Structure formats: structure tokens, C-alpha cells
Length: 99
View 1 (cartoon, one colour):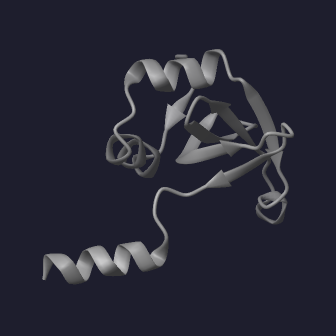
View 2 (view 1 turned 90 degrees about the vertical axis):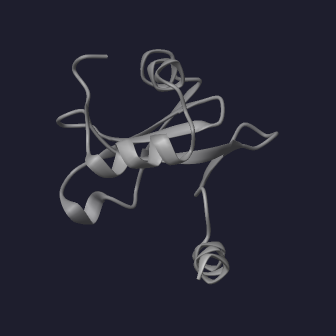
């Protein structure tokens, strides 16, 4: 796992989502599924999603930089779609509740 590095954003997401070091290690070393991202081609780099359990990590293919952490969803047919932890509306509702 030492060849991977984390952005501050990815570390923050992992902590916010309450994933453990073991969860992250399993995701990187024993992914249940890896999925190439087509969304990042416009940035001139490739991203691969590593999925294990409920965790997905978005990893730059060229330098093994972990960009973010996501909840994931593997559908019954085996296809995959990422699901973010919160929606914008949920964030707005949470901000209103705390003020």
C-alpha cells in the first residue's frame, strides 16, 4: 500500500465516512472490482475506481494518487455506479439544522 498517496480531500472523506485503515487497505490491495472512469479523460489523466465492500477509492492511474473516497453500489447484475456520501441538498439541510 506504500506506493499510494492520499490527497487531503481523500483523507478527510475517509475519516468523515468512518472507514478504517483496514477498509482502505482491503480496497487498495484486494479490490472486489476496479472500474475505469471516463469522466477524467478531459483532465489528461486516467482514474480507476477501486471498490471493496461499501468503499470506493478514486485513484489516478499514472501516479497512484488517491483523489477521493465514495460510497459504492454494485448492482445485482454486477454493474457498478458510485454513490456519493451526501447530496448537495443533504448538506444544505445539515447546515440549516446547525445554525
